[in-house]
Amino acid sequence: MTALQVIELFAGTNTDGEPVVERLQVRVNEAGCCQLVRSPAFVKGIASGDRIKVDKDTQQFELIRRSGNLAIRVFCRTDSADLSDRLTPQLEKLGGELDLEQPRLLVYSIHVSCGFDKIEKILNNVCDGADSVWYYGNVYDPKDGQTPLNWWQDILKPE
Image 1 (cartoon, rainbow, N blue to C red):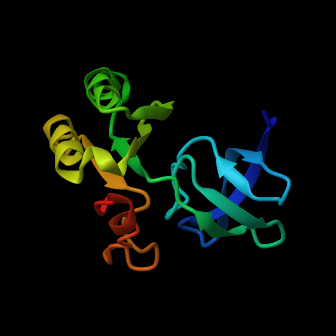
Image 2 (cartoon, rainbow, N blue to C red):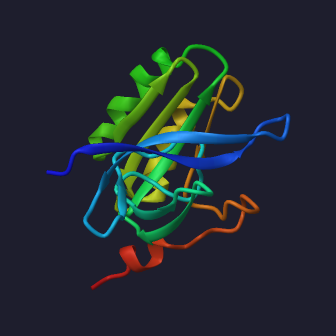
């Protein structure tokens, strides 16, 4: 088993235009590829289990292989503990994992084979859109936030 390492990836810029980096735990293999241990909170386009190659100078990454996991980020206006108590058991029943719990943020990973409809029904029933909202972290193009990446098509097609 490879020891965990921490990498820093560029996550965007803050309101002052300064770069924001996110520290993520990874397993590094012999070829220098990193496998994410958890889904990121702010870096878009990747999820737990994905393999990436990192440019240490720019803190940008190249996606090598997807794991099939969806990254789900839940933002809360108030403390997220109550929301986590209601949401986490339902997502865990589908095989999902709570990757990160902070006072106003939850990050989950769940395999796409669980079905978008099932996952979204759970999220929409618990998140009210006013005090809590959820977003996929790796379903839409990070550039426009709207164009589906469709990476799941190959994973979900029948054998």
